[in-house]
Image (cartoon, rainbow, N blue to C red; front, top):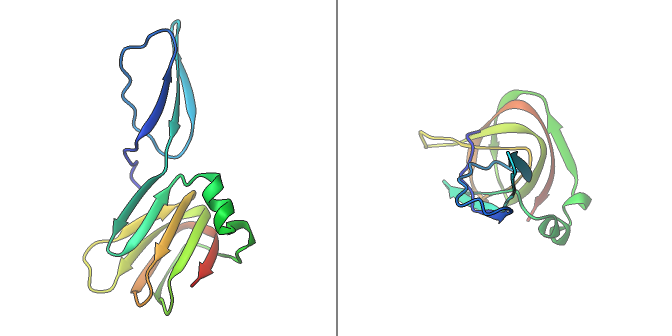
Amino acid sequence: MGVALAAVNVNVLNKIPRVSVLVSNKDFSFRNKNKSCRVSAMAVVTEKMGIKIETNPPESKLTQLGVKQWPKWGCPPSKFPWTYSSKETCFLLKGKVKVYPDGEDEFVEFGAGDLVELPKGMTCTWDVSETVDKHYNFD
């Protein structure tokens, strides 16, 4: 999965005049001589071909949804067809997946730490490149 550009929250110490950051999913800190900076990734929501992906969802949202109480599912690297008879919301604990919706030339990629909504009625092919472990819920 490519690295996403995200809105960031920057707390600056010692008057660092400008900070440019490319962020994935984690909080991190760095120091440069006598200057320090802490950067926190904020949730980024994207939608492509009807699939919604929220990168770095806040723990409060996961708790509100009851994600830890959802069933778990996992699979090793593999490729298989799937049709959604209802909307699925899932949270990937680990792994990496490319979903190829039928009739599309492109794919949607998501992985560990992503909260994903896959729409009812979608037929696609799942291409699991890294073993998946996820919580899931069907509406």
